[in-house]
Amino acid sequence: MLQVHSITRPRFGTPRLSNRKQPPLQKNIKRIVGDGNCFFRAFSYCLCGSEENHVAVRRAICNHMERNPVTWASIAGVDSITEYLDRGMRNPGTDQRHWGTDTEILAFADLFDCMVYIYNDHDDVLYQKQYEGYGPRPTVDRPCRDIGDLTTILLYHAQYHFEVVMDP
Picture 1 (cartoon, one colour):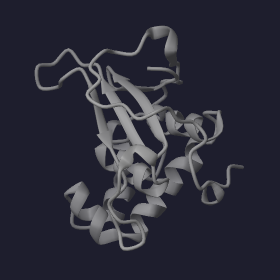
Picture 2 (cartoon, helix red, strand yellow):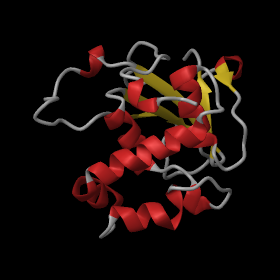
Picture 3 (cartoon, rainbow, N blue to C red):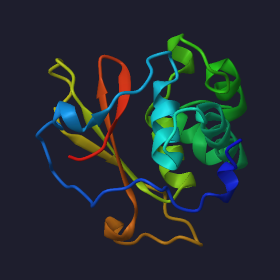
Picture 4 (cartoon, one colour):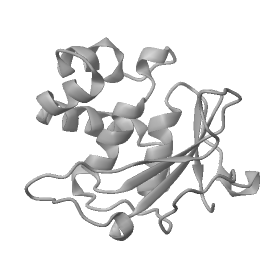
């Protein structure tokens, strides 16, 4: 079983990107199982090279959010982070309420002190085809600093599915 609490830095990372609008080449994308858990499977792969620990990653993100309920309730736009997690995020499933959102991306980046860039490849005028960055929130123990020294994780998001970008 993955001991998520013992991971201090994600294992997988690439140099920081900024304002990159070109999509990753298909040959550079690691395919992730599309079972409603792809968000957590992708992060599991980035942490330990396997999708199998997706439940542990999901649990770690939920626990992190519950340790800071006021912060995460505000970010998620809810009154109670526990209720938000209990409505679906806490358990694997194929329904949209079980899928990872911007809130969970931020929680992952905060938990593992890393940058996460998501290339959104949507055929929708509301979304620009580019990488969107998510980073950890500054705290007393972790002041705001240059993000260039943080591990960077790249994910590809299209048609409600997350995959890992191995090389931009």
